Image (cartoon, rainbow, N blue to C red; front, side, top):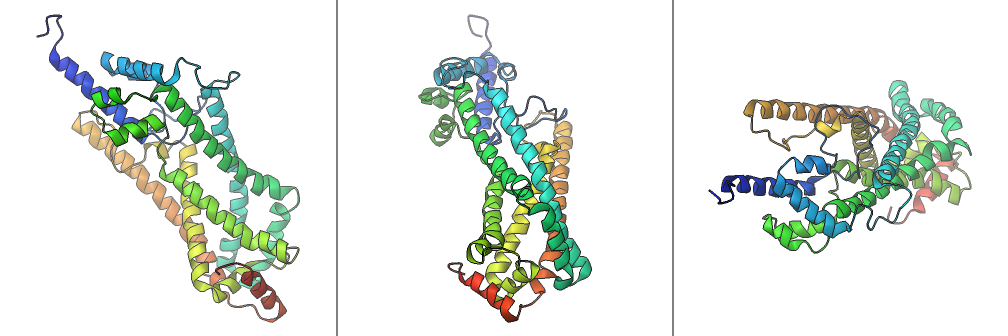
Length: 357
């Protein structure tokens, strides 16, 4: 027994709690800080950053450790922020709302595009019979006013808000937790040097939904270039571009077309379904492994089963959406055949302008 009345076992428990909490910081979701105006329900939300009051509940040793990191990393609550007119929490909430509402707008376009490029061809079983519906939908989302508002602006806002969110999260992480020059503190908690370097960098972990978002941005940009940008540059307009143009590409450049559209559908449907699951507060509790254990086996088993059910259901919905889009897009349009005549020569001229194709 310690002469001051402290049990050494209590000190060991506090040390263990501190070590587990600091290591768990590596696994934070890349979103900056959850919107304070959004209530995702009673379930534990792994994307939410821990508040100082919650951290203090882990024990006095943990509170002292975090206080030390906060002091050395920020030099005060507002130190190093550079935005005196708005708190990081408020700015982060605004960025999250921009990212959220821009996805609503883009979903309108995606629904129309899904209907005209997959569902209608699947029902009509013919590319020529489906072209008129695609042209009709373009009168909605491809006008000088609607195209920027429904397509271009939401994409730019969504991607830009995501990148800004990561920067804000890093800055808040550095201010609240990590701080440069705290290697001795990390080593005292038993954290390895690579992990300590990652902690001091402040960068949040890149989640699968964020990674799929960057991949989706790349394939959408390539798709827009091939079907909208390239015809505008070469021909001056894209009036002749439709489902037959896509089918012609599958004949002339089969491997490239199959790979590109498989990536577009797979990554796109996965990202959009998981994104909507996040907005509905479902993805936060999805996973195969239980992140935090209560120490009660029965409670842990129920929590693990619940997380796995959510993971399976979200992935099942994503797979179903991909299958529906592929059934019409790859099952009907991709097999539409080559376009002959002068229109086919126009298509060949467009594809020939693409390097390495």
